[in-house]
Amino acid sequence: MHVHTGTRTEQTTAQSLAKAVSELRRSDVAFPVAETLGIPQLRAGQEMPEAKVLVLYTGGTIGMKSVDGVYVPVAHYLPEAVRELPPLNDKAYVEAHYAGAAIKPLCLPPVRHMHKRVLYWVCALPIKYPRLMEGVGKLVFRAVVILIVEYHPLLDSSDMTFDDWIRIARDISASYDMFDGFVVLHGTDTMAYTSSVLSFMLENLRKPVVVTGAQIPICEVRSDGRDNFIGSLIIAGELIIPEVTLYFDNKLLRGNRAIKYDNFGLNAFISPNMQPLAHMEIDIKGDIQKNSLQLINPFSQFNFFRNVCVK
Image (cartoon, rainbow, N blue to C red):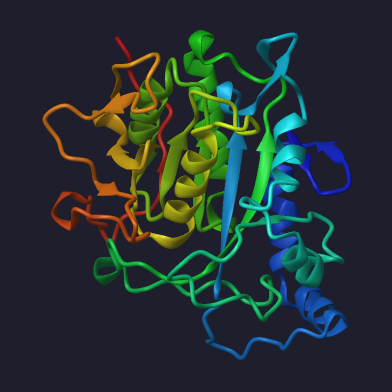
């Protein structure tokens, strides 16, 4: 896989990525950087008003580029294109607060109801989470900071295999403690299969894992990809929905209850016999079906279970 640092592209593994982010979280590294940037230090016990989201870009239409009138996957195109899209990246905020970062993140611009902007170096202290049972379905106000990891080669979702599903789950597992939520950018052909398999591989989740994609590439003038990506980032960084979900066309579906039923429409996925977990309407909270959310067992630990039998 490749990590886009904002100035260059580097090949890395999930383990080295987790190690790099872990180093950034150490207080003896973070505090001097905060002083250099003139950012006030965090007081002990103070919650950080920022959420870290890891984006795994596996491939799919969402990141394709039009070449001679045909959409084709192009390595390194999506992360750099997203970096230049104002609705998806607050460049001024990143430069102001992450100018000296080895891995320069992306940052979602302010969204209505997101009242707190980051005033602190994000890696100074670990984020404090709400109490587990009381936090389900609760909206927390944070800036969303994004790190995009691009798979190499980019995967054609119609050729997705069990090894690819294991790879995605393994990368989430390796980085699980370093991020507050995860977004998987994926092709639509087998997106519902991937979200379903991941829901069984990633046991006892306490963080959201959102699988999304697009029918039209994100950099096209008319694209559903931007809304799908932004909505997924808000869910992964703002909402405490501790399970694997599929987000498409303003609807959040349970990962193992979604199917693709329309190859040509933007409302491509539905969840038969089950209402969506949430709708992203005017209010970014959506219409959260709290009674449908999976509760967190406070005595269970996150586990990557790879021995799933698929028949």
